[in-house]
Length: 211
Image: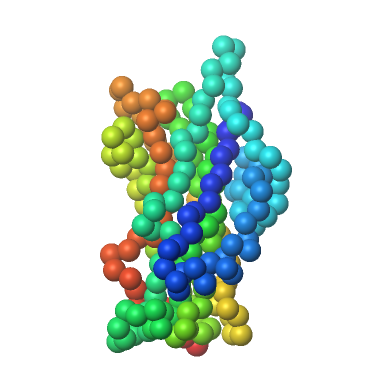
């Protein structure tokens, strides 16, 4: 089975605090790379290994070209702030800010369904009120079809430990549970994958604890 892989990277944040923190996160950016059909290889891409990815996935005697749905970060969900408990949500009270700045996907096409492996990576950055601690990041993946209607979604709880005397901590996750059987009339080109933090509200200390 041949597969097609594509990668992307999240947008920069606009606020002054975020711009300062992104200086740390952008150091992880690497050129486009490829990987074999394995979770370990996808993780290796996210951490900086590999080579140029293929651009298409021919299948069958007629060389039908199958295109893996594009992946992108939701514009309003590439960062996630965690504030000091019982404090105003002010930049000076940010304990941690998480940023997603790299993502990729890999498709496996079958006769009646397709499966997508998703990979995303970023950093937890220590804010003015932060320090060493443990953080839980709610990252939501969605598959949207025609009209941008979500047909599959899942939230992943990513555990990150920020060590002492560190200004940031890298995180990466690979998932392989996105499987979808297109309904009558749906076309592969109608689909798109979205990645972003799930933000019911910006978090306070239930999602972060200092040591």
